[in-house]
Image 1 (tube, rainbow, N blue to C red):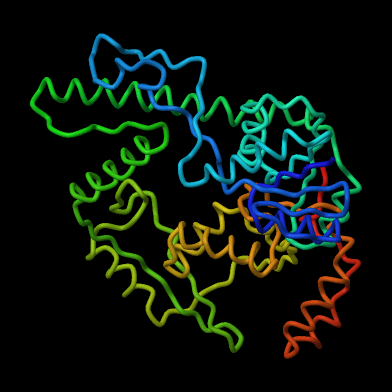
Image 2: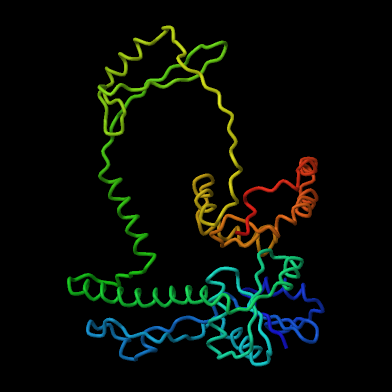
Length: 369
C-alpha cells in the first residue's frame, strides 16, 4: 500500500484527483486499491516544553540555567491530535510512503518529523508540487525522488526549530529572572526573530523622537529648447553653503542663484541619446510582494500572505506562495500556451491581447539552474 502524506487537506485532495478512483474516508482518501492520501494540518507535533524534560523546570530558577532540553522531545498538538492518530494508523499500513510536504525546508520538516516520531521503516519518496491542480500533480507523480535527497533540508529546519526553543526558553528565563531582581514585573520574552525586530522598532522610534527638522533648498529650471521644455537641476558648486548631504542650506544663496538665471539664455553643452533595454521584473518572492503591497496598497504582511494562500489553495491561480525564489522552472514555461488560453477564458475583455502574445518568447524568469 502506498501512502501519500500532504501538508494540507487541499493538496491532499489535488493528489487524490490526480490518482483517480477517489473514495473519501475520515481524514484520508482511498484511491484505487493501492493508494491512500492523507494530510497534516500544518505541524501535527510540537517541541515539548521544559517541564516535560524535567518536572523541576516548571519553576523558574536561575540555578537551572541553561535548561537541558536535549535530546528534543515532541508532543502532539492538542487541536490536531485526531488527525495525527489517523496518520499514525495509515503509516503502519503503508509499504511505501510519498512525502508531499510543501517544497521548502519547513514543508520538509513537517512530514519528516511525523515519520521519525512514529519510527517509520517503510521507504519514502518525495513529490514536489508547485501548482495546486491535478494536471501538475500527475506530472509530479512521474518524477518521484528518494526522500533521502532532502535530508539536509529536513535537518536545516529541525536545527532552526530546536535552536529557537533553546534560545527562547533560556534567554526568556534569564532576562525575566534578572528583571525580577531589579523589580521588573512580568515576563521579558526573548526570541531569535522577535527580539531583533523589536530592537529595530525601538531604534526607529528613538531616531524619530530625537529627529530635528532641517530646511534645505533646491534650484531647478524649466528650459525652452526647440519647442520642448526639459527640466534641469542646478549642479551645486563645491564652495556653496551645503549640509552633509550636499544640499543648499542658505535660502539667500539659493534665491541669488535663481534670480541670476531667471529668463537668461542657456547653452546646450552636450546632448546624448541612448537606447536602453530594461528587462521585465522577476516574479515576486513572498517577502518582496509583502513589501510592495504594504508600500503601494497599505496591506500588511499577514493579509498579503492570507491572500496568496487563498489564490493558491482556493483558486489554484498561482504557484507555491511561500517561496523566497523569484524564478520559475522550464517545465512551467512549456505550459505558457495553456496558461494564456485559460487567461483568455477567465478575462474575455483582454482575450485579444493574449492572442497577440508570443508564447515562445522566454524571459529570464524561467531558469532551472
